[in-house]
Image (tube, rainbow, N blue to C red; front, side, top):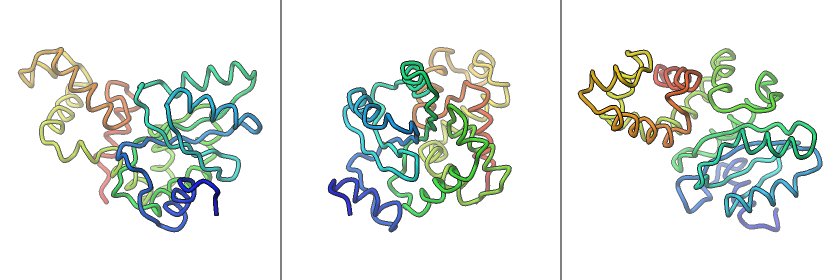
Length: 219
């Protein structure tokens, strides 16, 4: 048992299939490992994001936070690595869906820890991890990712029409806007809004490919 009640609730959620522990529905997660600078990094993250929850699992720190400032996790940790003069590996996750069970999240964690192609990178995100998941055929993990990343998108008919048109027109905003009879700036605003909801930038080729993989994944 933990001295910190929230840490205990998080532990129960992940390892004992307990209830979703956070009051706010929009909580993002990331993993990082630094060997010896954990306390300093956690303090830095707390200063930046206002409030974080950290759970240690093997040599990785699982951090739960609200990215209200919309800061680039990759740029942040590259700066931290530069300051320390050594590589700090970080994996940027996505927003958790409160309806998703801790068992599903634990499968994601285990798959990540057993995927050297991703967890040994200085920086990885859900897109790069999804490619490895698809190669190794982890259907439960892919389903977990689809539920959390696309949950708010696939239920919105307008969003799905925009995504379909954007892919058909080779990620070209001007052509897509023309097909949808939509102003270019309006379309760009919708794409930015959807990207925030998914945690993947649909205007980035790697992330767009990951979104397409998830959309085509059949549970």
